[in-house]
Image (cartoon, rainbow, N blue to C red):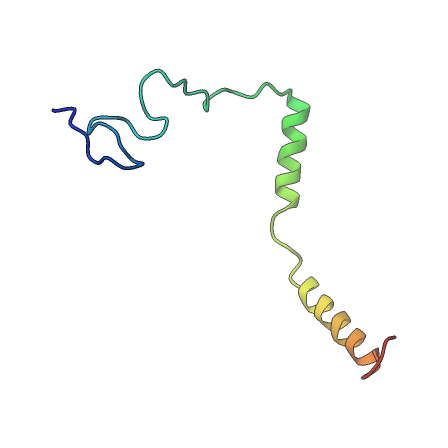
Length: 79
């Protein structure tokens, strides 16, 4: 493969040049393991489980509260 340039502009580079940081010599440290104890892992797992499905009736209760607040507000001026 030739090392002829593609352009003369701002993207000027040889044809076989790597893109961004994909070339050799760039360390890949994205796979490092986290060092946490079992208690911390259990706490994180519980937080994830608590974040799960919301209460199905909560959305309806929230909407009813918002509607009631809108009804109670005056039509003009501040409350």
